[in-house]
Length: 342
Image (cartoon, rainbow, N blue to C red; front, side, top):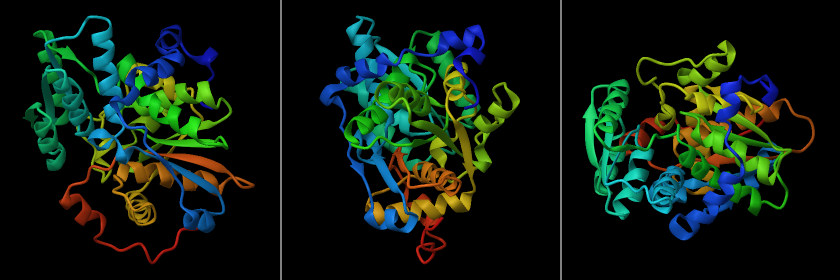
């Protein structure tokens, strides 16, 4: 573990959320989102000699776990009689769709600031859900524009630096851990802005305290790894280039960094490794798998190589929104002839 709670600064300790917020979020969400299944692959377990479980958020409403955080935030605002007439956010795609789905369902105007380099299918999907999508030249400009909207009266639903968003994201792991008979030795989570791993850390405190939580990042987009190494938040100037576009956040927030420091570690993977596991998980699980989901599997395999004895692990399949162009890039080289092994 990088830090214990006692090693955090006073301000960081204040940012650690109460784990029961995840349970309350689960109760609040009810049937507003899907209780997605936990899959296993007998063939993969035979290849690797371990029990691998997958929380299939690719089957979630809007195609990713982001629906949980967005919907929990909107329902929390309604519950506290603070529901705004207009919301705004910035996003690489999945949060944009999720907020549009949640807010527009209640008749709230939704503004989404996105980079022109974002996935075309995610841009169009956000529009289809009812969002007013504004494209900016860069991710950084999109973030700055979103804050300007907020200053002019729109409520900012931050993609990860928000208490209700994190609690909602945590319900994915909360459900999976409830559904698993044998609790996992370790849980592997893709890290962009850090909302999902923050929520996962809180969920495991409630249901499976002994489970370890590891973050997964691309080598090309390793701002969280650099932040942990340097002890301060590292930020990219522009979106890092990686096939895993779902984790292209420029930096962690102080809140998510504090939660990440409570986890056991962070494991990076190359672009080739991410593509390899995108292909294999698509093949084995018979589902559309985003590269950022495969990123978590790549990290799990690296961890398993250093472990003795049979392990049970949980891999968070965070989403399944893929453009045709991205699928072409993923399948340029066929890796299915290379059978998984440790």
